[in-house]
Amino acid sequence: MRLMILDDDAESRDRLAMLIQYWMTKENEEDLFRVREYGDVDEFLDAFREHPADIVFLDILLERERSGIDVAKLVRLMSETCVIFFTTGSAEYAVDGFAVNALHYCVKPIRPEDIDECMRRARDVLHWKERSVELRIAAQTIPVPLRDITYIESELHAILVHRSKGRAPLRTRMTMTEAAELFSDPRFLRVSRSHLVNMDAIADTRGEAFILTDGTSIPVRRQGRAELRAAVEAYRLRNVRK
Image (cartoon, rainbow, N blue to C red):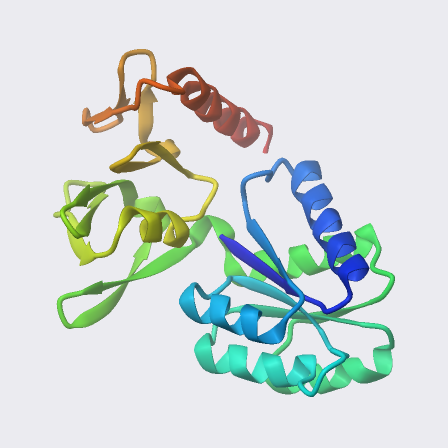
């Protein structure tokens, strides 16, 4: 999943990123988000336009001509589902944020408990374990729950999205680099140049290939194979703790 921070004050921006990283470590969710920081509005909007985020933290009082509210309105035009949090030096500005369906706001200096509250609210809204992605198939866009996907493989200039329960794979035009961004979720592990695997679907990692619960054999790159096995075991351990 993607989380983006926009704040033109570098110190505030870095502190927020640090607190989010601390939260992920504390909650055993080290791989949950790809966190990106931005100090420039145009750079932020360009990045969001290319790969919309699941969560954004926006500073309300940006120093230039556009406020965080202005940016949030543009974000909302590009994504109806993105969770928006505002950061502000004074609570008096926060009420303006609810016109763009902001979920919450944090008053600076932001504390660890503020991030706890934000992420709790985000979890309730996004239902992380029930997350879906939208794929363009033929002339229509369809939502596909991540839990239904076993693995993704590249095929020429497209990807094949393989699903559980014997359902036919879905083919869509996309590079594996784009797929890695779209499926940026703790469940998915890139095991080769051409394969992303849902770790919930892995039954055996002991050989040269990973074997899925349906018997499918997924080739695993030779270099770094031990690290990939360790990543699967760490993922399983985190889920056991939960």
